[in-house]
Amino acid sequence: MEKIRYDKSGSFEGLVKLHQDQVLNTCFRFVNNRDDAEDLAQDVFMEVYNSIDSFRGEAKLSSWIYRIAVNKSLDFVRKKKRKKRFAFVLSLSGFGDKEKELQLPAPANPHTDLEQKERIHILNQAIDLLPENQKVAITLSKYEGFSNKEIAEIMGTSFSAVDSLIHRAKNKLQKKLHHFYEKHL
Amino acid sequence: MTRKEKIEQEVQKTFESFDQVERLKSNPFFYARLKTRIDDLYSKKKKIRGWEFARRVLKPALLLLIIALNIFSATLFFKYRTQDYTNREQLLDFWGQELILNSNQCNPNFLMNE
Image (cartoon, rainbow over the protein chains, first blue to last red):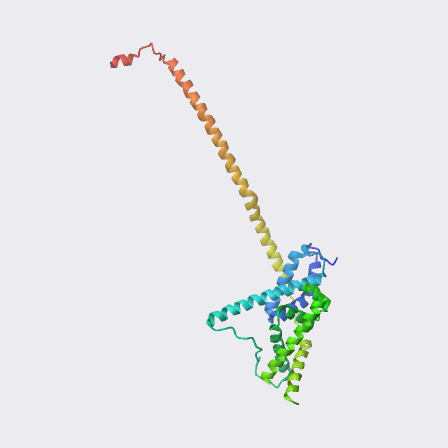
């Protein structure tokens, strides 16, 4: 069984060093902020350290770590959204909830690099508007390069469910992007 | 290029951005920071464990000790009170005999007062 010991003998350090970048990037894909992602990655490894004894080895250790990373990131995003919603209600009490739409990031710039950054920004916004499980599946698949089998382990679901989630996410993204470019081109 | 084609192209390009996102490198002090946090947590846990020991073991032990002391002192109190009482009776008897305070004997002071 792929399991590290709790004896602080250096195996934990090895584990952290092996996964820290991917955990950081996974968190970053959800929170879109480096500092928040770094804090979350720290929290992920704290939890790994504290609950390594409860890891039963049913899934791969790495899948378990990324599952913690995804759950922590989603919790963070939910909390942030709740705060935003509360602030919105406070500032505009009495107004109805506006339909979410993609926003134009910054004035168009001829520079290709900047154009690319804009595209990434638009894509991230579109992903943010997806339902949570589709968002997780497509983020892990497209950004982090996990296989569908690994994603199934991380999400605790079946291979076919992941396949379907990614397919639906792609369709929705396509529609949202179409809608966006129809408006802004 | 028609507008529709242009839109298609933009959507396609945006989709391709998946492969062009930059990957973050974690801070070189990531593990050191993590280790500090873990050490802090465990020293706090030790403190909490100390308090937990005080709360779970010392508190009931102290309570039991107080109850035991109360019972002990109550027992002593009642024991000596009865002893005291019997002693007082013995003392009265003793002084009664010593002063020969029998009913058929007259008290000279009593007579003088009369």
